[in-house]
Length: 312
Ligand code: GUN
Image (tube, rainbow, N blue to C red):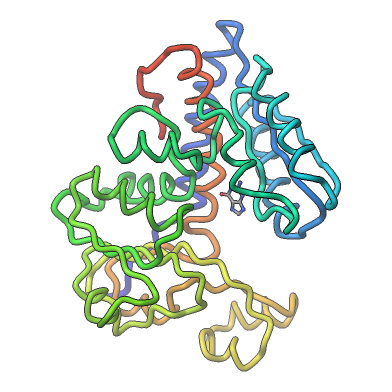
């Protein structure tokens, strides 16, 4: 039997509809949630992400504005911009799009974002809130992984979950969220012994390594749920063949665009897993939906409302 596809586009649309309803309720009380996005230079991937974030704000009714300092911006100037956004009452969320140029001290800039407005959930204060199960802002991609699991009714409590990748942005926070949801969690990384064997015991396997197609069927327990956080662009014909040989739809898209996307999970995993998130159209769309949810949450938290938001 083939695996169930966990449709990220559908779940993301559901969440954005719920967020839009919540924004409308807030607007009726005179409060419009506001998001400021800081985009430095002209990284094409970052430009696409930011464009999609602004579009999602328009769809949900959130006010948004973009700040676009030049590629040559100094840490000092960026800190000044962040501090001016921290002071503004009409701005509830601040997102500094990564990566930042090499001359900028990224850690210093991210630390300067007020924890109350840190809709990325990267500030150590929010990391601490997450680890101690207090209300706070949770990183968007990990929060999106949890929404996929919950809304697809995948049992988390008591499950053996394995997270491959230990980044601050995805691996560590998703492991923490799974722990808080009562899964038994193992975090793996490049130095893990017997990786294949550890992964193949997982009821829920989260791949966030950044290596195209690394998780092959031998890593996957039959019937398990596989969440693929990787987004890797393939332009090489031989590499394309490794993943998509015989897939007519991919073939046509690759011929047309000269590239395609593959996750950290090999497409053949579909033959073993019980459920999986596709790439594209899996975890990716959730990241933006959760950013919208976080902006609403930030608007409420900052005004002392700790009643949980409907999403996130
Ligand atoms: N660049 C790629 N993903 C992200 C993200 O989730 N947040 C920020 N700020 N930058 C990114």
